[in-house]
Length: 149
Image 1 (cartoon, rainbow, N blue to C red):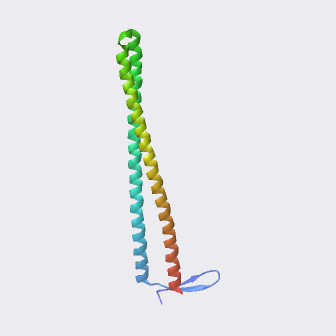
Image 2: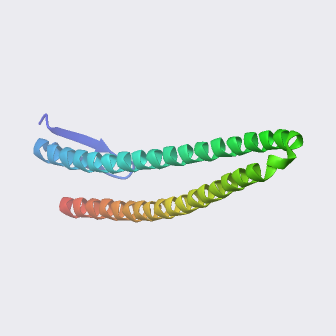
Image 3: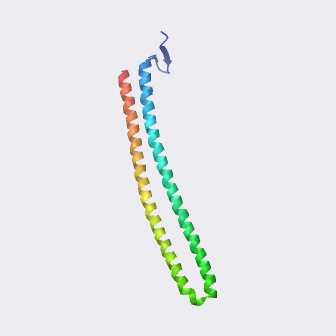
């Protein structure tokens, strides 16, 4: 009949009977599976990009603060050379700025540590999910193979 196709292999010949209903069911299952996992991947990618942007913004702020401190130190050096008596006031301002920079650096390190821990958890979750997907694929293939027998 026109729905029968002969498939040749090196050792044997098998007859394949086209089953449109079964093909539609398999197509739907594979499509649902692929779409659901694409969504998960997209969400994780978006999360990683967002975290990367946050880190970049924090690094930019720290760089700005370092630049401000450098300018303050430069101004301080210029000022102190011409006004020795007012240097203690300036020293206090510089010390205060240095303390703020240290606090910001500490918070940035803490946030980076937390972010690295979260990324490690996500990576472990994805690894487990990948193993589960492989096992599911093998089980479905075995079930399909058993169904043919």
